[in-house]
Length: 121
Image (cartoon, rainbow, N blue to C red):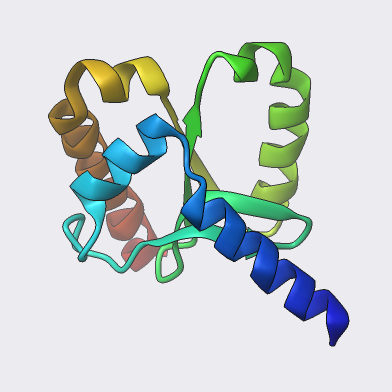
């Protein structure tokens, strides 16, 4: 029980301390603007997903410059998530800063592809 409480507190902390590009993207996709309910800083196994769409089992991860130094960790994390059926979409922070509208369009297209491939399975 204490573990759940600790994870809940940590999730709340992450939601209230999002990075600037995460905040920009959240403002663009919140309130079902992608056509799906999006959770932010969602705990999943040992990880916290930047954004998560449960119905499609899709994680959207925002990569800043620090991710260049932790590519192997991100790769291992993505493999673990994929083994659990989660599709990971990575978006670089610089793309969010330069044109968040393009990022949202790309996400809409990818989510549509994923939804259509799931319905054919």
